[in-house]
Length: 99
Image (cartoon, rainbow, N blue to C red):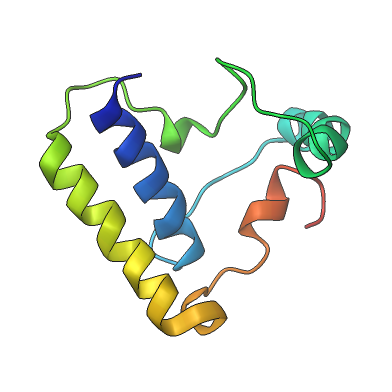
């Protein structure tokens, strides 16, 4: 993954939180997520090639300036509006077994 693809990946994750993109999490990923939850939330790190939702896998070429601008726009929205900008509270917990 290059920098432009990473920006797009992060942008899409923020779009889920804002309620603009919907992701589907299958049973296996929910189960795996429950096992990984402690590692991710309590001092672990995400290793290269860790599982991710297919909606966040970016394999095509991306324009770095465009994707960076989109991501910054979403980060600014969150900074300005705070928690009220988040429309899908449970999205980050779908994978980690809270939903």
